Image 1 (tube, rainbow, N blue to C red):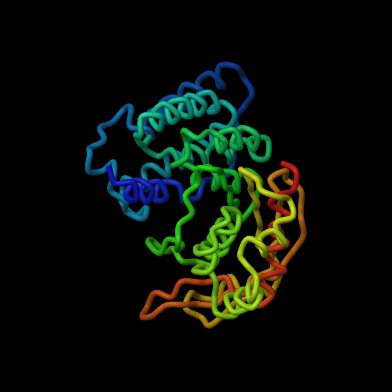
Image 2 (cartoon, one colour):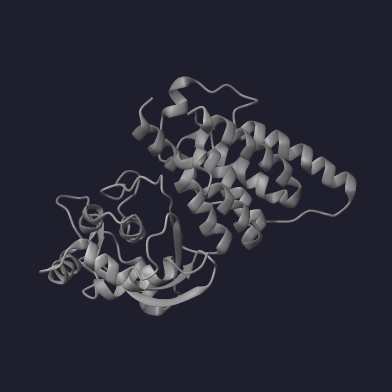
Length: 314
């Protein structure tokens, strides 16, 4: 089994939008019927009621095939059932843990996680954090983090655990390399104390500022100055892009534009707002694909701020 293909497949199946909660009448028969419908929908999503070929299990399609659309529609139906769908979803979580313990993929686990987050909202965060802390689900960490973001109404949530693998570059497939990918990559590299991954995530201005700060100083010394919370095995930090005129213009700036600046509000793993920062980006690369890079000239101040927020009491 190719671990990279598995990881890519999970991203394809987890990075999709989920419809808003519609609600259902409170009558007991209707609730029971909804529970039955939820069981059937989960069985459909997890291929317990249909055939999954070996090829389709590992094929990633960027979410554009008829099968992908059917899966998203099924996840939307699950959300529309509201709380009645939760027992079926919990059953899917148990199956997911069992499969992952055997090194096997549960189809559409990302969609099921997002459905749970959409139904439960902030109340679902403790359960999702329990899943994040389960090492058996290490390969599903990205999907769980995306569900946390949906649960808390964030643009993104970046979690680090002792078993987290920090990639050296953000993903570029299927629309990757966005500004959110760039910021997530930098945050994860900083949380994971991976200087090489951090450097590759930065644009020229931020990289130059970091190099100046390291002049005559070791990485460990700089890290010690900024990461005031000390060494931590597990951290997490979320953020949301703020709805400002300048921020909206920056978010609408197409990939490949020279630069952009977006204001973001950061949130700790405890759910507390840490503050706001202007996040600057530049585009890098040759040819058509120009992935974004975090490019704050005040990168040291930004890293100190992120460290303070990420190490706030969980």
